[in-house]
Image (cartoon, rainbow, N blue to C red; front, side, top):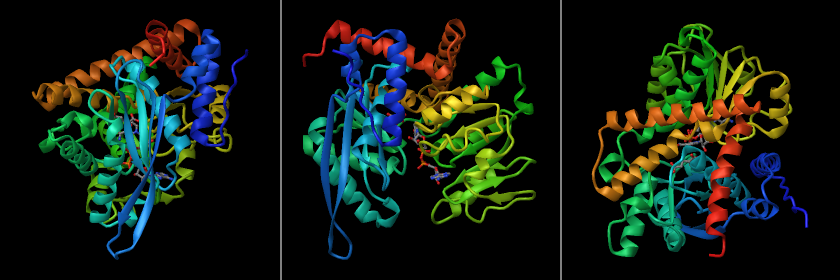
Length: 425
Ligand SMILES: NC(=O)C1=CN([C@@H]2O[C@H](COP(=O)(O)OP(=O)(O)OC[C@H]3O[C@@H](n4cnc5c(N)ncnc54)[C@H](O)[C@@H]3O)[C@@H](O)[C@H]2O)C=CC1
Ligand SMILES: O=C(O)CCC(=O)C(=O)O
């Protein structure tokens, strides 16, 4: 019987499934494995009741999806955002499977989150919600089963609350149950900047391959959170001119180059940690979508999914796209970029520095022995360069786009694992 191809109206799941099916078809993957890998192994839905500060009770929907554990424990972040839903988590979990496989680290893929606007909650409400969520997914997470980490709107505090809740439930310290923890609570030096360091490493590797001096490169980074800010900072340090940044408050463009350090200092001081009100000589404020269409050599989307699509792909004025966010380009957008000769370094290669860095943290937690930041970075950067080279070389050798090359390499490792181990348990 032919493969029953799944479809979805969810942008991310639509993108994930289309990319997977077309790569699977190109590599001639057996129908049975296509069926297995186009579905998650396990999807957990929980309700998360919270007693609010005013005495009322609100119930939030929480999810954790484990797409694959063929290569090791499921691994991937937790997102707190009003748009979080089961399909989005499923798509992001599958992307984690390919990311970990491509990176060659011993994990499968998972993702989860809570449908909530965390900025509407008080610190106490946020902590209670996170701890209740942790308790409800407790039977399914652990250092050798599924290891969550931060993603959009989550970070060190959430990871500590989860670690602490699980440790209390199990009656022993469980530092390896989550990564992305603060350094004082079994976190690792280097993890906070790891994703941005990895994205910027890919940008610099790309420039090297194209024979472009970073000093001649202009860059626009969408999103000024964990990934976008560090990416912009490292690229500026390498000599690139960051001509545009953006966040939820809009786009900030400066043809003379934005002072990333000053912009970050502004965000740090802002009560909502946003760019609103930031100014410097020559800065032009514009709409968040318009910034994507400004002139630059490299555009690096580091915020949300689906931002490069059939509507704007024809209008972009960049030569290269290096994806820091997960799923920023819809397949319809990809097709147009391809026709226009705009080269795309795909998300699960470019942003894999985060999960590789999480792997380093987990290794240190299991060993109870910690590295310096120099050791951490000196391991991360060569792995990123090596992974970039592997995908670049595969793409050149087989005359395919980098996204396709990354999928083909990543799916092969998981498929080999499935063929060897089977899928009975
Ligand atoms: N944090 C990590 O280690 C990793 C994150 N990622 C992905 O990178 C992306 C960003 O994640 P983080 O930086 O961690 O999140 P974050 O929450 O720290 O920052 C998100 C940024 O995007 C901005 N933003 C939101 N809506 C926007 C819009 N409509 N236009 C422009 N900017 C907008 C926010 O204002 C904020 O500056 C997500 O897709 C995430 O899944 C991928 C790999 C690892
Ligand atoms: O650090 C991790 O485990 C996962 C980070 C993540 O969610 C991602 O790479 O999308």
